[in-house]
Length: 116
Image 1: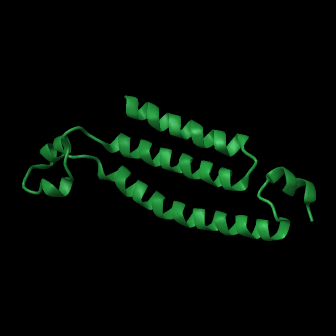
Image 2: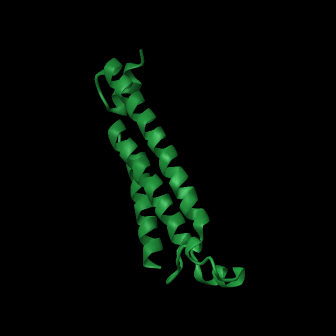
Image 3: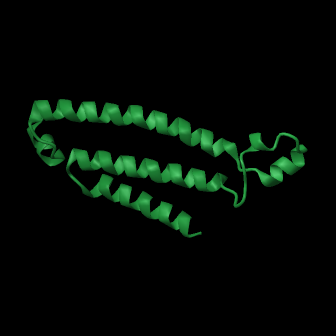
């Protein structure tokens, strides 16, 4: 139960960075922390104490495999999410660098004032 609470704490930290900070880099870090907390939560949903990978239980009947294995679907979803998140992170950093080239600042309030 405490692990779910820690995932929630990470999520709130990421949302705080996203909402309260004015620096674009800090906002990107907040988005990344939020993404990782969601990935952690999905992995925790599929975890079973004492469970093993279903591929290691080949000779057992299906009902036994369901009782003794972990759920591989959240693991596959998180693996896909990590790859997509890496691409989105690269895009956010590229856009952030272009904003810095144009406005010479990472502060969102200054960028909103300059608009040009």
